[in-house]
Structures are given as structure tokens and as C-alpha cells.
Image (cartoon, rainbow, N blue to C red):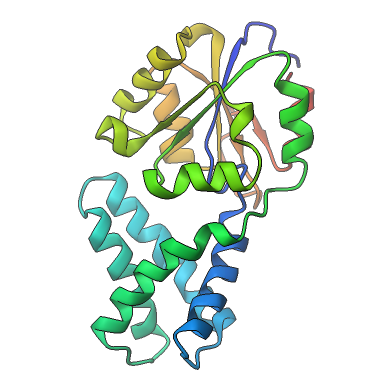
Length: 229
């Protein structure tokens, strides 16, 4: 079903276009080696990924700040795998992680094909909760920055998705209309419910096939977006 009313497409970045999990795992492997830590990065990631999601939820809900997020997700993961790591090393790792995260810039399969197809036909935009200092680097180093007319991140607005303020800010910045706009993202809470709360159309990028809401348009591979545009 083609969405003929759409003129502006808003994408989430991490976990939607930029393959966060893959790039993050490679970053941890690198910084463990740089800091001479004898830690199996695969074992670490198995525990880290759900812990990281938990702390990002707290961050979205304004219950912790950026510094708490960066430290606590590492500290709890080391505790879970039974490895004692000094606070000074955890703080160093949290800084190294941000420094080296954009050394790896894998995109989800078909990202460039989709962007090349959409770019001549629609105004493309980004709405992200990611940190300002790394999101632009991710986009530039992965060669996708030039596709987007606007980029809105939570730090410039002062609130995070799903807060309606960030969506309204992005719509105004894009000089777009809600009735002609759509949000595409992987987070049901942040992207889908957040956009729906201001009346935007939505498509859930459901990589793991875990979505349970039959009323939400969803794709499990980016190439499936061709069915809608």
C-alpha cells in the first residue's frame, strides 16, 4: 500500500539505519584491547545489551543523566559477569567508548539503497535521542549525512523521544506538516508511540519480529519500505 500523502520522512538513527549493536560490539573489543583488559567481548556484550537498553529507558524518562548512563551501564555489566574493575578504569572505558564508537560504521542492510530511492522523492530527516557529539560523526563517517534535510537530537531540544516536544520541534525545523509526515524507527515506545501522540503516521522497524500490535505498519527489513513509498 503506497502512502501517497507523505512528503516528509523522519528516521530514527541508532538501531534503524546505523547498526548500533554491531558497531558497539566492535568498539568494546577495541577498547578492551587498548586498555589491556582480559575480557571476552562476546560474553560482555551478552549481558551489556539488555542492561544498556534498561539504562536508556531510564535516560529517556529523565531519571538519570548522560554521565550516569555511561558509567552505570558498564559498572552493572562488569558486576553481572563477575569481573572487578576499578572506577577509574570504568570511567576511562566510558570515555574511550564514545571516542572510538564512530570508528565502526556499519549500516543495516539496504540502508543506502533505500535512501537513494527516497532522497529524490521526499524530504528526509533524523530524530534521535543519541548524544550530539557522536550522532553527527556517525552520519558523516557512514556517508549518510547528505541525505537528510534536518537532524534533530534530544540534546538540542532538552527532551527525549517519546516526549511530544521533540517531535513538534523536528516538524517545525523541517517546515513540514504532521499530516504529510511519517516516523520510521525501531522503538515502539520512543518512536512509534511518541510520533503517534502528535498525530504522525508511523512504521515500526521490527528487526527481531517481536512486535505484537497488528494496527502498526511494520517492516523487518528496510527493503520492505519500498512497498510503502
